[in-house]
Length: 488
Image (cartoon, rainbow, N blue to C red; front, side):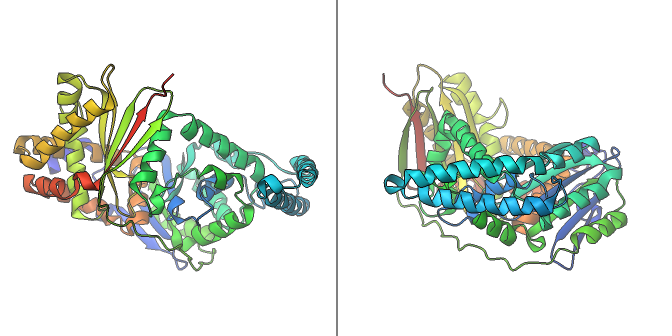
């Protein structure tokens, strides 16, 4: 394994020396910082992760975490404004008018249309008067003008992520911008952006067959746990998301003691630590008020859901299983590779090539998140004229074979080598290493999971796969979601 790694990595980061490469610090306010010095290019890749996502929202407020991610690009008290003292007064009036309008609209059929019309006009006038005082997209402009690339953010069920790659000599600019976003964010264009994410939902969930099916599958697979929620939120919640709750959610989740920063690139760790302490160390820690998470009860029978949509058929089969760092999660990583990694994997050889039942089929371990019990899922599309029921039977045959026959050692070794190659390929770039370090530090509280990952994968045996498959890949532990075309 050591030779294999050394051939792939220009900067050796094998499981044996990763700990020596990563400089880990915890600031007095609880912020965790991981730094890796790598002289591959004169750039730095940076990931900021807050340990909060859709699973942490209150009932009735779904979509808040995702909308907050959007709002964090709207600037601060010093970025994105021409005169914040004047702007602040108008923003307060905008929130008051928008909140009053939402409250009236919430009344539904008994809402006073005259009040709605008056408040709608008032809000429109306030939004128009606000425009001359703000500078749109200034955070993006500042980064772009200073050579940054890959500026982006994402929200999942478990985490919220902000990332960027910058020239190494611009790291203090990054610290100035990002610390200001954590201290003094200003949620400009709130109501406009709320409409933007509602449209995003219409495109990604309501008008997209894959999105529609996946959302329905999660809501059936998880009947109690918040993993059943869509990250974008439910439509009725999104319509009335309010700034007051979003600000509360921000304070309770985007705190330094709930944040991990990974910085990888052409830097000197002592100098970077000094900059991070200067800008982020002044942010006071906050008391974290986590929402109690309802535990998913054991599933006691197969669940089936059908989605009618004007699109070609497709299906998802999913099974409850433990999250990392449980050993079973590593076993399912190996099983995922055996079933669907490459053209020689079992699903492709048997179901796609030999039986010609599927256009595509993919096993995925760890949907939709990894902080809590999750799913080992199979996503597949039947090849015309075959239908989902035929495809399901073929999948069942392959899974029964996994439960009945030990995986040959040659096939197991090939799967492990594929995992090792994919794993190391991700570590090969500054971005990939920063992504993985920050992810496991934020998710599990320990980036050392990376150090031990390949060694644990190597320990997986044919018996481990048999036991995991027989324990978890059972009919009573399964959810099946199918998308069928609407009959004309």
